[in-house]
Length: 69
Image (cartoon, rainbow, N blue to C red; front, side, top):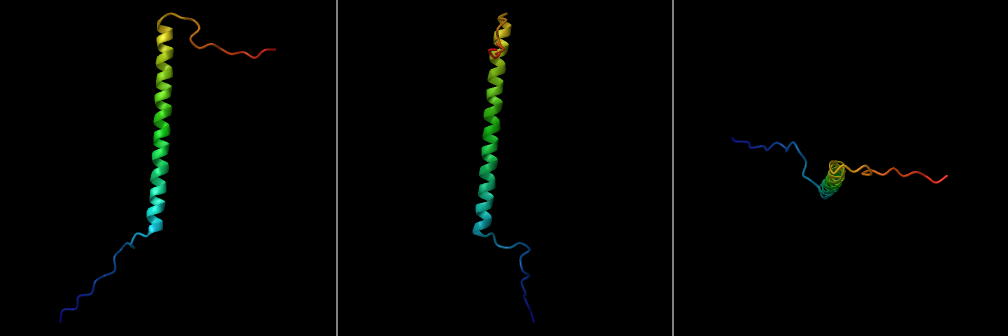
Protein backbone atom coordinates (compact mmCIF):
# COMPACT_ATOMS: atom_id res chain seq x y z
CA UNK A 1 0.00 0.00 0.00
CA UNK A 2 1.47 3.12 -1.18
CA UNK A 3 0.07 6.00 0.81
CA UNK A 4 1.24 9.20 -0.85
CA UNK A 5 0.61 12.06 1.48
CA UNK A 6 1.83 15.42 0.36
CA UNK A 7 3.19 17.61 3.08
CA UNK A 8 1.89 21.16 3.14
CA UNK A 9 4.24 23.72 1.61
CA UNK A 10 6.48 25.62 4.00
CA UNK A 11 5.40 28.95 2.59
CA UNK A 12 1.93 30.28 2.00
CA UNK A 13 0.72 31.39 -1.38
CA UNK A 14 1.49 34.99 -2.15
CA UNK A 15 -1.59 37.15 -1.91
CA UNK A 16 -2.45 40.28 -3.85
CA UNK A 17 -1.79 42.41 -0.76
CA UNK A 18 1.71 40.91 -0.44
CA UNK A 19 2.46 41.72 -4.07
CA UNK A 20 1.10 45.25 -3.67
CA UNK A 21 3.23 45.85 -0.56
CA UNK A 22 6.31 44.51 -2.31
CA UNK A 23 5.66 46.76 -5.31
CA UNK A 24 5.22 49.81 -3.09
CA UNK A 25 8.44 48.99 -1.25
CA UNK A 26 10.34 48.58 -4.53
CA UNK A 27 8.91 51.83 -5.91
CA UNK A 28 10.01 53.74 -2.80
CA UNK A 29 13.49 52.20 -3.02
CA UNK A 30 13.69 53.13 -6.70
CA UNK A 31 12.66 56.74 -6.00
CA UNK A 32 15.24 56.99 -3.20
CA UNK A 33 17.90 55.65 -5.54
CA UNK A 34 16.97 58.13 -8.27
CA UNK A 35 16.94 60.99 -5.74
CA UNK A 36 20.37 60.03 -4.39
CA UNK A 37 21.76 59.77 -7.93
CA UNK A 38 20.36 63.22 -8.80
CA UNK A 39 21.88 64.73 -5.64
CA UNK A 40 25.25 63.10 -6.32
CA UNK A 41 25.37 64.26 -9.95
CA UNK A 42 24.37 67.80 -8.92
CA UNK A 43 27.10 67.87 -6.25
CA UNK A 44 29.71 66.60 -8.71
CA UNK A 45 28.75 69.22 -11.31
CA UNK A 46 28.91 72.01 -8.70
CA UNK A 47 32.34 70.79 -7.58
CA UNK A 48 33.60 70.68 -11.16
CA UNK A 49 32.35 74.24 -11.70
CA UNK A 50 34.17 75.34 -8.54
CA UNK A 51 37.37 73.54 -9.60
CA UNK A 52 37.27 75.19 -13.02
CA UNK A 53 36.80 78.61 -11.42
CA UNK A 54 39.67 78.13 -8.95
CA UNK A 55 41.86 76.66 -11.69
CA UNK A 56 41.45 79.87 -13.70
CA UNK A 57 42.78 81.87 -10.75
CA UNK A 58 39.59 83.70 -9.91
CA UNK A 59 38.94 84.92 -6.40
CA UNK A 60 35.14 85.21 -6.44
CA UNK A 61 34.29 81.57 -7.14
CA UNK A 62 32.03 81.20 -4.12
CA UNK A 63 30.70 84.64 -3.27
CA UNK A 64 29.61 85.02 0.32
CA UNK A 65 26.24 86.68 0.77
CA UNK A 66 25.87 89.00 3.68
CA UNK A 67 22.68 90.48 5.07
CA UNK A 68 22.11 94.23 4.90
CA UNK A 69 22.21 95.88 8.32
